[in-house]
Image (cartoon, rainbow, N blue to C red; front, side, top):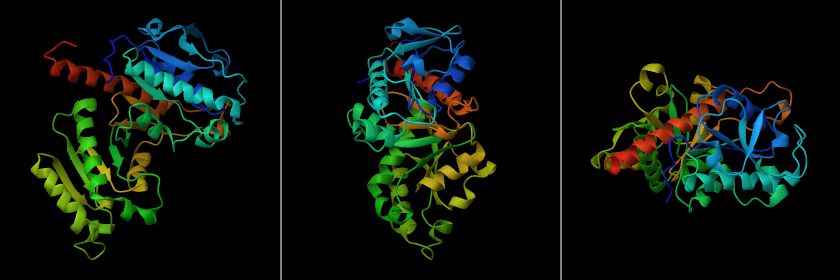
Length: 339
C-alpha cells in the first residue's frame, strides 16, 4: 500500500537515459515550474546541462516546497560522464536504480508522484540485462505486479489503447474480453480517482472499419465488444460504442466523453499526436502511485544541442501534480476529511 504524501512533498523526476534529452528537458522544466512546485531529480548531477543550478540533498524531505533557485538532486554516481547521443552501458544500472528509488520514495509517502524521463530499452538490456519491455512493465512489477494500462493525455483528449506494442495482425487475437474489460475498469476507476471525474463517460472504438458495419467488415464488434459493453453498462458504466474509429475524434465528438478506449496502438495515438504533438503525456493507470512521463523518446539525434522541447515534460509534471492532488482529495473524502 502506498502512503499518502504531504502536500509539500516533491514530485520525483527519474533521470532516464543520460545520453538522451532527459537531463535537458528536466532542467528546462525546472526553470519553468521550480517556483511553483517541489521537484526532486534523481541521477548523476554531472549529466545535467552545463550551468544548471542544483542543490544536492540526502533525502526527499529536504526538497519540500518550491525550488526556484536550484534544482534539488538526489545524487547518484553513474561512473562515466554523459556523451550526448551515445549511450554508455555503464549507466544502465544507475538508470534502473533511479526509477526504483523514485518509486520507493512515492510508495513510502516521501514524494507525491514520479515523472520518468525517457529510457532506452536497448541500452538497459545491453548494460544491465533489463528484464522488462519498458517503463510500464517495470513500474507494475515494482508495485507488486498490478494490472496497468497506458493512457496518453492532453488538454483536449485522453486515449487508452487496449493493446499496445504488438503487430496489427495480432490485435484481433490479443483483444480478448478479459483484456478489454480490465482496460475499461482501470480507465473508469482512474478517471474517478486521478482526474476527479465523478461519473466518467467513456467512448469505445470498434476494431474494424465502420465498427464492423453490422458484421459486413468484421464480427468482433457484434460478437465480443458490444456484448461486453452491454454487460458493463448493466453495472453502471457510461459507455458509448463500439464506435467507428474515424468519427470519434473531431471536436464535437470529443465533447461527449472523458476518455476514449481504442483497440490498438495507432488508433489511439494518431489522434492525440495530431491534436497535441508536443504536449501529450504518458500516464500509467492502475498503479498505487501516480506516474507520468513525457510522450517522446530519448531523441539521441538532438541531445546536447540545446534544442530539445520541454513542453511534454512540463505537461507531465503538471499532470502529476494535479493527479496527486486528486488522489489526496479522494483519500480525504474516503476517510471523512482527514488523511
